[in-house]
Image 1 (tube, one colour):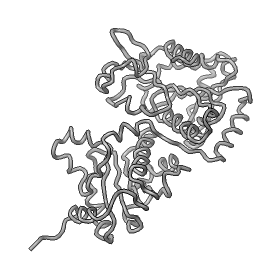
Image 2: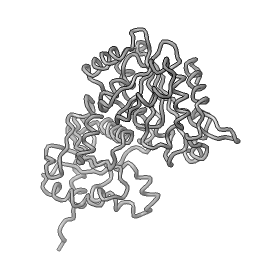
Image 3: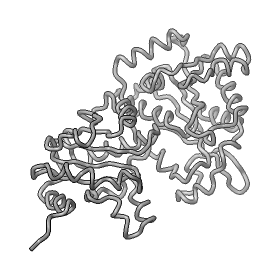
Image 4: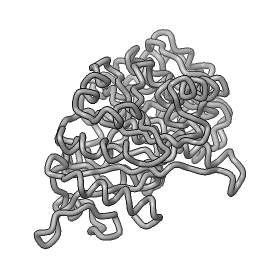
Length: 392
C-alpha cells in the first residue's frame, strides 16, 4: 500500500497539469534576505523578466519581510510591472486567487530556504487543483558549484522553474524606476526654490556608498567636487540622506564661491531622491558603484522609453568602480545607461578604463581591478572632461 503523498510529490503532480506560460494571474512570494537598494533593483528586474518571459498578464508581489516591503514598495511605486504589492505573512496569502505561485529568494543556504517545506506545506495542501508552485533562486550557479549534487536540497519542496541560461546576463543593470507626475512637479519646484535657474544645468555628485572601500579618499572626493563646482553655468547637488551635516562639512573646506553653488538635499526619502535624479535640468550624475547610481540609470531608462526619439536628452551617468568583493562587475552594469570608469592595473599602469579595454572573463577582469581608495581625483576629472567632449 502506497504511503502518504509527500509535499513535493503533490506539487509536482499538480504542476504537470498547469502551464507556466500565458498565465492570467500569478503571485511572486519574495524573501530577499537583504535591504540593499542595488540588490533590490536587481531582484525586481528578475521578476520583471519572469513576467515578460512567461507572458503573465497580471502579477502580484508579496514581500514577506516588513522591512523589505518598505523598500520594495518604494521601488515598485508606479511600476506597471505589478498589479499589487503586499506585505502578508504566509498564513494571510490567498493562494487560490492565482494560477501560478513563484517563490523568489536570493539567499543561498540560509534559514529562508531551510523553512520552505514548513511554510508551503499548509498553503499547498489547502489549495484546490490547478495551481502551479515553482521556486526561483537567483544564485543557482553558486549553489551547484558549492554543493555539487546536493544543491537541490536548498530549493525543495518547490520545483525549480526552468529559465533561459542567459537570464542573468539580460537583467544585469536593466532596471526601471517610474516617477509619477506629482513627483516630477515636486522636483521642478524644489530645484527652482534651491536656486537652479532655467538656463542652468544640474550635476549630481553621489558621495555615499554601502562600504567606504567603494569611495574615493576624502581629499580626492573633495577635489572632484571642487572641479564639478567650477563648471560654468551649473550647480552641483549632493544628498544628505542621513542628516550628516554635509553642508557644514563641505562649506568649511570649499572656497566661498564654490560653496555658494552647492545644493544639499536633505533626507527626504528614496522617492524624493529619485525624483531629483530624474529631473530635467540634470546633465551629469557621477558617483561610486552603489544603489543610487543604479537608480539614476533606472529612472532615465524609463524616460528613454517614453519620450519621443530625438527629444529625450539624457544626462551623462558616470560610475567609478574598483576592486570590491568578487562580483561580476560587467554583468551588474551590462544593460545600464551608465558608463563605468574601472580603476584597473595593467602592465603596472593604474588608470580608469572602460570595459572594452579590459578582459572579457569576469574572473580575469577582477584580477585587474585596483582599490578605489587609491584612485586619484585627477583621473576622475580627466574622464569627466573627456565625457563632456563626447569621448570618454
